[in-house]
Image (cartoon, rainbow, N blue to C red; front, side, top):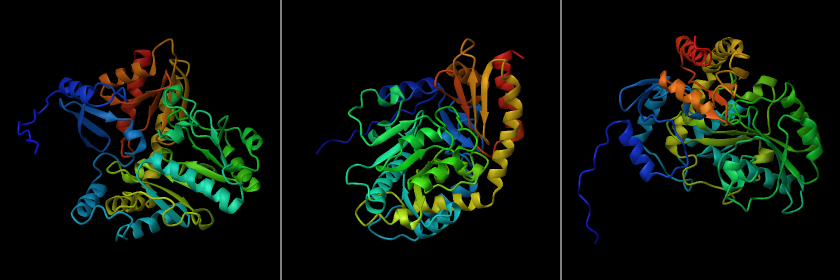
Length: 412
């Protein structure tokens, strides 16, 4: 029998100690800003040294409702004391309510719950292929899915197989086949790529990792018409763009479009717990049969309880309205900076991407300068920075963000 080490664990104190230990014991698959967060409330977080920061990343939109949201924490605490996991070998008393609520929110017949966003994307891929074989009649083993250049859907081997990000793909070949990449937002290119093997078009209504990149106006409507005409599933990855982030419940709502499959995650767990799901109608979802797909944790009672409360909050409409208002404030603040340090600004709801003149600074340098001013944000693709504050951020919070960016770029 191995002796148990009873030596007391050292309590780490201070930013440098935490960073040193993390870098020593955790894989270096991220390059974080040098801040160690310890507490959070609403739109604000506090580091181990007691400094406050406005969180303008919000867990890549997982924290749409803010840190430690009272309603969500209360639900989670209550469920923690009752039942957290059963596996899907048994029914639990929370999944039925969550499933009904999410079908009501999406307008779909059924959901399939998972945990991470990547799992939900993988689920949508599997469902699309199975639908292609069993409903559309695609010959076995030949199903293809059209994807978009510049996409980000997750990090699994299959998902990075259709990524054009060298960092995400380098060293991970051989890749999964069956995907065709076309220019984002180009309906004609999609139409040309569709043939008798095509089962789905997988896309982000807004490309978040790309820097809040939006397709041309009318793209969603045109894509919906094309998919219907060619009998191809329209699969919308709303993991970041959905659940009020863009000023609507779903980003597809901006053009009154309903996809065949919604993919959801991040904010579905309220920033408390990993919760994801896809939603579709019977014609699509009925291809899933017992044993053909599953997850030990997917649909667990803790996740379902939190997800049900998230849906209840979204159904009130206040978060969508607040997101739209934040967007108006961000647009008004950032637009005048184009030509004065910024080359482009893209805003949709409480989500903004700014492209910085690369001769001035990189996105990382902007993020570091913002951190020094008590604001946390994340760069992407060189000189682009994304902002996604929690939807509980105040007007003063947003004004502070705009003022800080302006000061960094113009010195005033």
